[in-house]
Length: 443
Ligand code: SF4
Ligand code: SF4
Picture 1 (cartoon, rainbow, N blue to C red):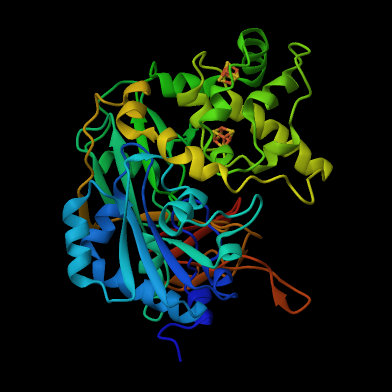
Picture 2 (picture 1 turned 180 degrees about the vertical axis):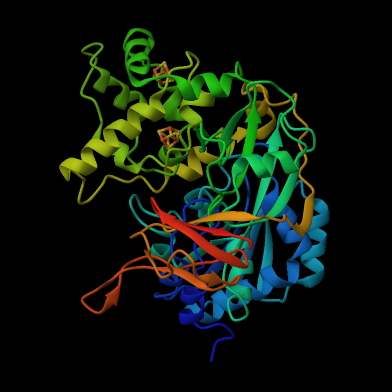
């Protein structure tokens, strides 16, 4: 009997805490030889995974072992940047023989699970595949911790880094449903007027205009940036501008493709050819169908392109259109030898990326404050995961306690839809259920 059963993980509402929000219990349906913990944390200025690992090393190991038991894996590995020497030393003292440390270079996107699987296991996940296709299950550090705790309590708290233009960059532990503004204030508040919030990281995150947006189980961090910062200006560029500039300035140098991590893995994504979908010339057929294999890492737009064009958004626009039209290669071309040839020497060093993005001016730390941030009101979103939104299980006026289920995935034909239940993160009274949010106030 495994130490944590799949049903407990489902009931605890555990989902991928690294940003994707995939319901974790589903990952344990198959068999794998390795469970890989993703502690690569390659988004500039974010520190929460390393901090959680330092503070909760026993819990993360326990969750890794539980995952290994569930999929029958004989090996576990923790992929972490080699520069975090102290945390690696701590891990080496604590890890059982079946789990090892896999030190990673300080490059972007080390935390992309396809890159991580290749770097640690030397296996290439085929285009459109998942780690299970090559015998691996990948989990975020915080997800592993949540698995370890699943028998005792559901997911009602979130760790997140607050970074950039704030008085004291920090990693916070907060109740799910707090506002981003409250988190930023807990980091001493913005140090610039007209602060902008980039949620989830400067590379793959998004510009959140609503500073009262709610923390959910996938929120990894907020980077506060001034209004005129290059990252903010790039995020504000509208599609018409992207098309107009891209059409006139792309010289088909192909740097975007030559440095694309998924192309380097041998996948059929070629952003320079996708740029031809902007119809700026007749230099050849555009490869838009390959955009289905873009992981949206943003490296091409924010690092590789010497003209500061936006191949990533060209890829994602095409990718969405193709998905709507149901167009996809059934047997995508794949060159599994390409990574041995090029991947190692074409990684984007973090120091260069930080410099290019104008981030070196910020204090690059995020120590953990381990006491839960107090709250008087939280908004628990009914959709915090990939899959169907939960249906509310509570009504206004009802008293709830931390950990009580307030929403569950809908049941269709006797089976729950893909998703995970959500739980109260505050002792109090439900004051409103509206627009997909259960509001709870301390009373
Ligand atoms: S790197 Fe920039 S200029 Fe070069 S092909 Fe790609 S989008 Fe065009
Ligand atoms: S965002 Fe650009 S670099 Fe990243 S996978 Fe897509 S095409 Fe490649």
